[in-house]
Amino acid sequence: MNRLFLYNTCLVICGLCMSVSNYLQPMFAALTGSDCLLPDLPDLPDGNTTLACLANNCTSTDVVVVWACSAYVGQLVYAVIYGITSAAYVLLTTLVLADLLGPDMFTNSFGLLLLFQGVATLIGPPIVGFMFDGSGSYDMGFVLMGTMISISGFMLYPIPCVQSALQKKADRSNMNRSETAVTI
Image (cartoon, rainbow, N blue to C red):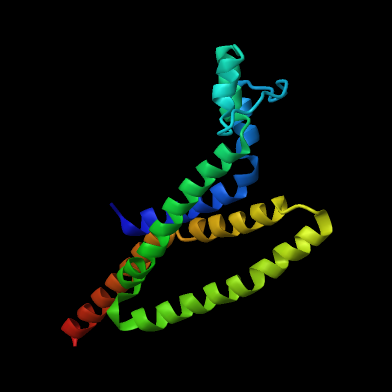
C-alpha cells in the first residue's frame, strides 16, 4: 500500500472523527430510529441498563435504544477510531518524510515538521478555550480542530501529481541538455 495515501487517509479520518465526536450518540440514535426518551429504567447494582431493561420486560427495540442512547458508546467509538488513526499517522510521519524528501533532507524536514506541530499545540488550546468562554461548549472547538487535521490530510493528496509533473519537467530538461551536448 502507498504509505503517503495511508498517511493522508488516516489524517482525514482522524480529523473527521474528532469533528463529529460530540455528535456520534445522536447519529447512532437516528440510525437505529431510537427516540432516547424511554422512561428511566432502574440501574442494576453493577450499572448495567441493558440487563435492567431486560428484567423489566422491555421490547427488543428498547434494548437497541439503550446502547444507541449511551454517550459512553459514542465516546468509545470515537476513542477507538481516533486512537488507531492518530497512531498510524504518527508512525508513518517519518517514513513519508523519508520517502518524499530522501535521507539528505530528512533531518531538517522532520525538525520543521515538529516546529509547526509544536506551534499548533501551543496555540490550539487557548483558541478552544476562547471558543468555550464565548459559547459555553467545547463542540465548536472539536469541530474546528478536527477540521484542521482533516485539511492537513486533504492538502497532501495532490503530492503524487506534483511529483509526476516535476519529474516530467526534469526529464524534458535533461533531454534538452543531452540534445544540446550531442549537437556541439
